[in-house]
Length: 177
Ligand SMILES: Nc1ncnc2c1ncn2[C@@H]1O[C@H](COP(=O)(O)OP(=O)(O)OP(=O)(O)O)[C@@H](O)[C@H]1O
Ligand SMILES: [Mg+2]
Image 1 (cartoon, rainbow, N blue to C red):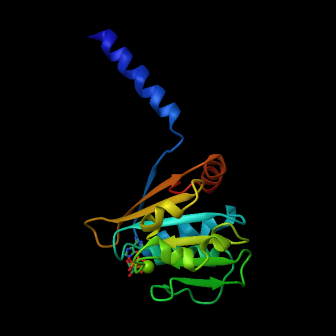
Image 2: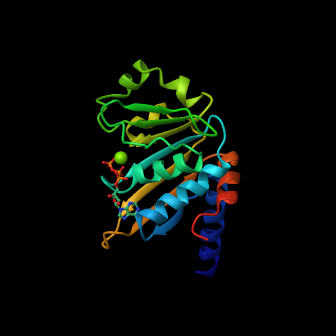
Image 3: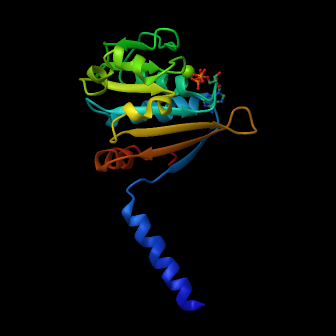
C-alpha cells in the first residue's frame, strides 16, 4: 500500500509541475472589496494585457472593470457595453478596451470588429463573458471567474494567471492579503 501511495504522490507532483496553471480563490465580502481588489491590480498592468472575466450573471464583472478603470486613472464612468460589445476609454495610464461579449452569437462577430487590434494593441483589454470566445483569446492572460455565494454580498473570485508574466504580476498584486 505504502509504495502505491508513494507512486501516487510522485504522479501528482509530476502533473502539477507539468501544468503552469494555478487557480487562486479569494473571497470578496462586498462590491467595494471587489472594486478595491481590481483597482490594486491596475497598478501592475501593462500594454497588451488581457483579462477574461467570467462567472455568474450579475456577479460583479462590471464592478471589477470599474475598479480596474479607476486604478488606471480613468474618471469617465464605466458602463457595461452589452449592446455595443466594445467601449474604449482613452484617458488613463493605459487605454482600456472594455468588451462584453454576452450578446454575441458567434466568435465571427468579434473577428468582424477587428478584435486583434485591441487584444494585441497598446492598452488593457477586459472581456466580460470572455469564455464565450475562448478560441480567440491569447494563451497568455488572466482569467477571473466571479461566483455568487449564498450571502448576497459575498463572492468567490477565482484567479488564474496563465504564463510567467502573469504569474509575476499576480505575485506583485497579492489579492486577498
Ligand atoms: N462582493 C461583491 N462583489 C461585486 N459585486 C457585488 C458584491 N456583492 C454584491 N454585489 C452586487 O452585485 C452586482 C454586480 O453587478 P455587475 O453589473 O458588476 O455584474 P456583472 O457580472 O457585470 O453582470 P452581467 O452578467 O450582467 O454582466 C452589483 O449590483 C453589486 O453591487
Ligand atoms: Mg457586466
